Length: 183
Length: 122
Image (cartoon, rainbow over all chains, first blue to last red; front, side, top):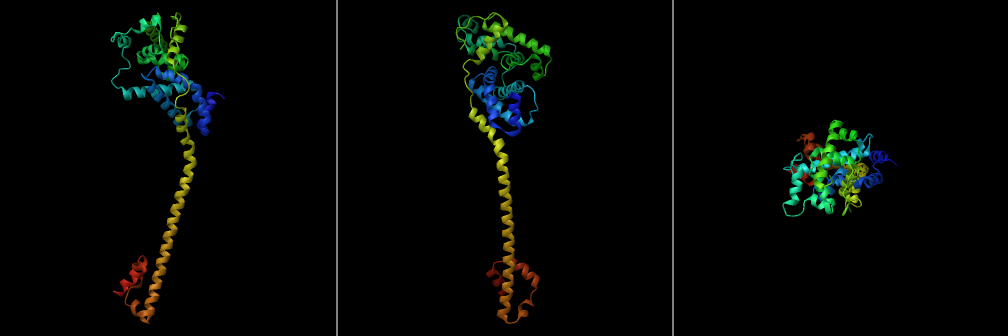
């Protein structure tokens, strides 16, 4: 059964098994996607649950379309709501994200992400670097590599021209390369 | 785990590395039970709402029947009072003639039997 059929089945008949199957199919990338937004695994788990609660509440209104794009939009919205509610002082568009991420580890005398990457990199290094990206490039990066959406779908989801989405992806890749030492 | 990964070179390889980093440590589905529980009330609510509505109608009807029963009982009480008074006085019109019967009935309609007797005696 396709993702679309499963979501329609749940929306029309409330079939919990269909919903469970959807959750199983999409849980891994959605969790990774949310961890790229939120600083702790607990926050990401909460946003993950919140995303599915939103899906449950709006499933009856689903009228077709790529389920991955739909889920990515719901997860993105849940993550941004959580960020704005819990950390209103954080600027999501700060241009000094790279420096802040590097300073975060350099200030306490520990090696910078770049230095650590040269020997070995961890998932937390990657997550921290992704979280430090400006909001636009970060969202495009996550929608591209985790939700695996096309740039057209990403542009539609974010309400920006496709050229902007491509530029943000380029920006995100270049900045991550610099932060993680992959250049 | 992406520990000790080789330094990525190409863009695809680099993005795979980023993806691996983001997915590191993610296993299974967190809180699936909670999500399924959240999903269930949607279906059970409508099922049980009919039962709740039926129960509410039954309660309302029972109140209506009780109210009608009470009215019947009050009217019966008034009739008994009138009959009793006529018996005591030996003259059907002696007491009732001095009182406005409709107002008496209205006053007694909801009064307990003993209270109606007491009021009339005064």
